[in-house]
Image (cartoon, rainbow, N blue to C red; front, side):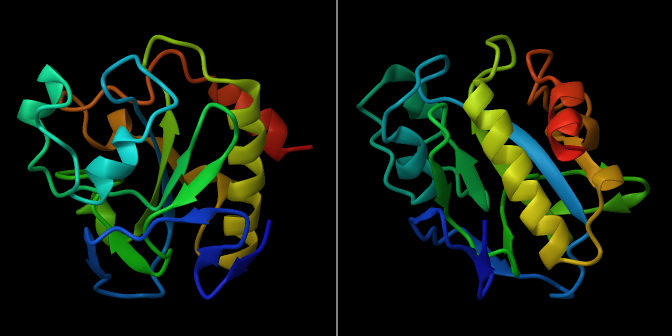
Length: 181
């Protein structure tokens, strides 16, 4: 994996309008793991891209009526096949965490990189996703000096009671095993 100008070279670029400047560009010190599927439990379609690019058709599925106006994004999506899509350059603030707090610091979007895994809290993630996620994390760790393995967390941990992802189906031990190889 290689990062150039804050873009992952191996990722497909689909720029999202849902980002802004970080308060301190150099303060990239947290990785937040999320999961997403649209509609819930369905994989392998274009709806996540549509949501992150403000193009989700409210009429395409009943679930979309409640979310199509959201202005959200992540830095990366890792699909179940291992394909990577990047929506926001790492030096910019993606809108992935919402109201959040990590070790006493509020507004986690200000200092974090958000990585979505195509999945749900209850369906096991694909081995390809763990392999790709670990390779991406390794490159992020080598590119951004304030990041560390100790500062990788789930969305549920920074927004308890509000978010449950990546959920019980995410195997933290497996990710750490890949990172320690």
